[in-house]
Image (cartoon, rainbow, N blue to C red; front, side, top):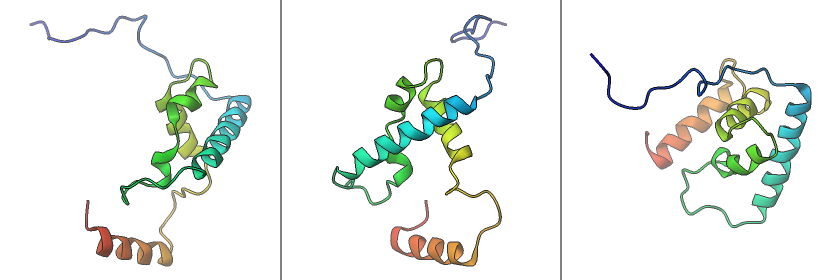
Length: 106
């Protein structure tokens, strides 16, 4: 039975490619420049929009040929030290409770 929808050819499938230290440097500098530029803009009207959503990933991807905006976003959250993957600190839990009290659960 044939499936409806687009069928991916072997040519259209991308095989994962490791990030180089050069690409990491370009990504870091580009995000830094975009973030500084965005600080000049007024904050978004939606209070739920975080700093994560303010980075123009399509613009960042233009500086890295062969990488998509999604590739850049995923890599950034892997190398950016502000987003820890370990256990939550006590103050993180307190801030989360405060945010849920203000904005409600998602």
